[in-house]
Length: 236
Image (cartoon, rainbow, N blue to C red):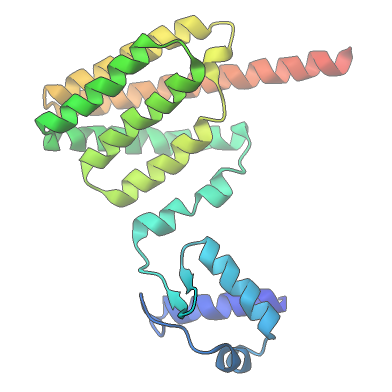
C-alpha cells in the first residue's frame, strides 16, 4: 500500500468509525502525519482525494473539515467514476435505472402539486416543439430531474442525475432512425406526464420503466452504429 493510500484509508476509517463526525475539523497535519505514519505530501493528496468525493471540505483560512456527509452529495460524487464508463458499461446499469426511475415517477404521482405539474408539462411540451438534439437532451434532463425532485428523496434524485448525465453523452437522435426515436420519446414523456397528472403511481411507474427500456434499446442501436462505423473506418 502506498503512503497516499495509507493516509486515505486512515482518514476514511476515522470518519467511518465516528471518530471524526460530520462538520468536525480534522486534527492538525502534524498530528495526523504522526498517527498515520505518512508525510505531509501524502496526507495532503489523501485530503484532496476525499474532497473530490465530497467527504472532506478544505475551507480557506479556517482549516479542513469533515463534510456534512449528506447522502445526496456522496452519491453525486459517483459521477467521477460513472462518467468514465464506456457505453457498454453504462448499459449494464440500465436495469437499475429502470427500477429507480419507475419508483421516482410513482412517488411524483403521489406527491404532485399544481405548480410541479405545470413545470413537468412545460418541459415536455418544449421537448415536443424542438428537433435540436442538444435542446432535447437538456429538456429531457430537466423533465426527469423535476420528476425525481418531486419524489422527495434527494439521494435518489442525485443518483438518477448521475446516470442521466452519462447517458447524455450519446446522442441517439443523430442515428438514421433519429426522427422515429424522437417521436417515440415524445410519446413516452407524454405517457409519464399524463400518468403523473392523473395521480396514478402504478401507471406512472409503468410508463417510466417502459421509457428507460426504450432508451436502453436506442443506446444499443447507437453502440451498434458506432461499432459498425469504426469497423468500416478500419477496413478502408
